[in-house]
Every structure is written in structure tokens, then in C-alpha cells.
Length: 162
Image (cartoon, rainbow, N blue to C red; front, side, top):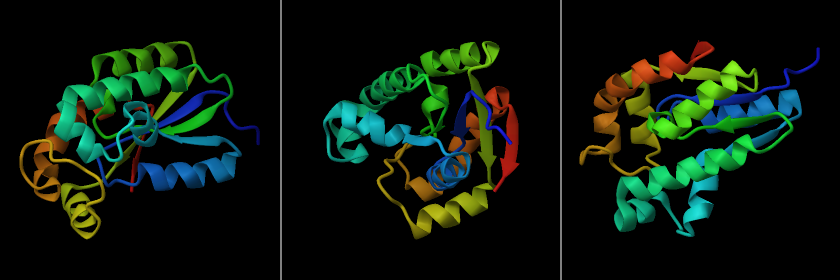
């Protein structure tokens, strides 16, 4: 089986497993894996996502995501990209995804999980995830997911329950 020639974009909320699944998918498809959060963090020159949010707030982080995503789209060979949970909420990123889909250059896979599953995962492993609402990241996931779900679904070429 020949792997598809488009970039595969994994989207979904924090804690759904985009990075883990992305790495496994790359092994199977013999592709390069890119974690957009890692690339965006390297662009900022900061040590942690929390540090970016504390010093520049959400606009600094979203700008770094936008710049990182533009770098990813410039890669000619097909790659697997794990998008940050909020990356698709950035208009420029969502528009670039739609343009890529229209040209047959990107496919989006929405990894979906229940708020309860996500909350349990984020409680067990909070990682370097800043609060988006001022609440604990595990406690806020239901509200954040409800706000982002229409965008995840609207961009998805496929939805996979994890």
C-alpha cells in the first residue's frame, strides 16, 4: 500500500493523544513527525509553554503556532503534524488548512474523546499545559472542548474516537 501524498494533520483537544498517535502513525507510514507545540516553542526561544503564556500571553503563543504551521506547510514531502489543541482556532491556521485540503495537500484527522476521559488524562499528567480560562486545565476541559468542537469537526476529513 502506498501512503497518501498529503500531510496528515492530527487535531483535537489537549490530552487526546495527538503526539503519541502521531509518532506511531509515522512509524507505520515511514514519515517525519512534527509536534507543532514543540516547533512553536522553539520559535519563541522560551523553555516552556507556561513561560510563553506568562510573558507574552495567548497572542504570543498563537503567533508562534501560526509561524510554526507555515514552516510545516513549506515542507514538500508528506509529514504527520500533531497540531496544538487550540491551533485550529487561529484563523490563519484554519484558513491554511482549508486551502491545503482544497488542493489535496492536507488531510485532517480529528481525535475525539469525552470530557471525562480528557479530564482523567490531564489530572494524571498535567504536562506543560497553561490554563485557558484561569481554572485548572483538567477542570476547564469540558468548557474548552465545547467551544472548539465545531471547529474540530468542521475541519475534519475523518473523526476517530480514542
